[in-house]
Length: 197
Image 1 (cartoon, rainbow, N blue to C red):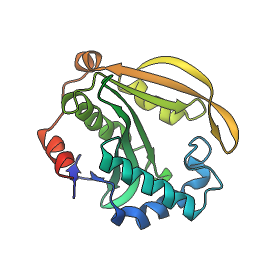
Image 2 (cartoon, helix red, strand yellow):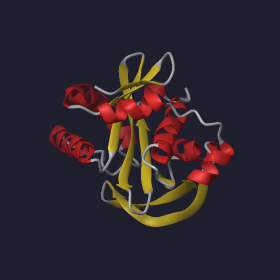
Image 3 (cartoon, rainbow, N blue to C red):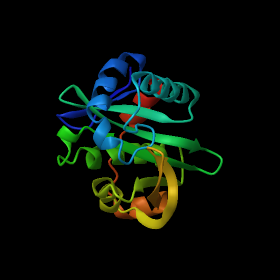
């Protein structure tokens, strides 16, 4: 199983069936909060809905269409991070993340996300990564801003969340722009772990 250490407290594991019960518990606990701005959670999702969605994530991992990983803090499941819609023809992908409300304000996503972005650029050989955030989720918008992503547009009524249209901000960064802004932290161990996953 893919396990990748970020620091003494945080590590990632590639999504597997064995994670489903723990992941379900975290999602249900955070449903009211995350469901305000994430369409795939919603405030009315059932256990069956979550299981179908997690099966879809697992299937897309296997097919190489996405990379869905689980974030652990002191060996407790606290969130998820992913690359989705990996397009090797046009050399781009979308990055996404979510975090248990009890573990926010600790810089967890800001520590984890650069490893995933650099995997996209230096292993998958992509040229661009996008992040799309609900306009009402200020904490989520701060992450790409901190990491030097460029705000590019506000997508009007981009997704239905709980049946209502919501606006989303799109941020983007290219490989060249990333290299100018960051001292690279990419590890060959991350590449090896994902491939072996």
